[in-house]
Image (cartoon, rainbow, N blue to C red; front, side, top):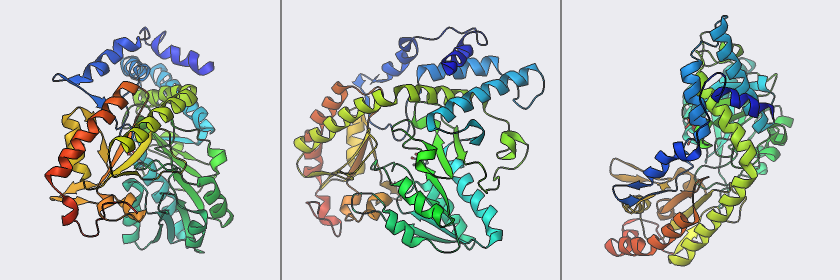
Length: 433
Ligand code: PLP
């Protein structure tokens, strides 16, 4: 109730901006669904989500009317500061946190860096020189770990099982007497599998190891409560739940030892220097409020669409399989392997037909890099290169899902007929094991 009133303040009194209708703002988004005469459908919500119209309105009003520097003592500064604190409360409410424990960042990547580097720097003088993570983390974690390795830290990367889930036992076995931090993602961005964070955190914390979870792909999709997860640090990012890009947060349990990595002024209680991105943070707060109110409804609707899509593709296209099937997953994600097809070619063919999808493999210097997640799951080289990630969202319709299912047989048949790439890829087997 209180947050709704506060939110109204952004559009109303302060902003003199009447709340826009969805049609007014989504008019543009819906127009984008038909581009150059082609109906388009977006199945890449794990890459980023469209910005909610309420968020757009709140950001615009804040940009226009709350230009003050939140550190300024005068009226303008204090108004901006008040907006910042409202957003902090809205975000805290979404993840069961206390507002003072949240530090705003420029997104998930910075929050991951802050958590890992911040703990490493704080605990190094105490003789800690070891980190534990998993082989299926986002590059924001993996690359940061590699950077610390170059500075003499030891890093243990635990593999998941074949279905994309890491076990608490495997993580426990990786802990050493000088382990500073366990960093374990909550939901995997490629296959959507939820990791047993609470169970792993209990083990690690009992051994005096701090626990960080990258919850970028779970916040706004499934209930996330920092106390239930029992972690010390949690990363989230606005653009994965209909908020703006370039804004996120690190939740830091009170009393956690970590040093600021962004140094400068005393913003964010000296934990993250730099003039705050007040409009972006307001947008993050509104997105968090919307996510909290819509979590159940969105989750239920997306589970239905995802399952229809998954079953539909498996039935319509021969020699397909789901990666991560049978495990607890976020409701919007499926990862489907198409035997005999390079996922990049399928992505491009689908884009030409108006469907935006993604792959975990990346094309670099003419060769296809396998998905590091599928590789860690133990899939064959071919199966790490033939998988599409399809992620639905708040605005995905049944019609879009049906159209994608209907389009796939002809496209996959054409690609399989064009080149039988399997012969060229060592270790490829047509049928997944
Ligand atoms: N962590 C995960 C699991 C992600 O999926 C992403 C983005 O895709 C990030 C971190 C990085 O977040 P940001 O794009 O806000 O820097």
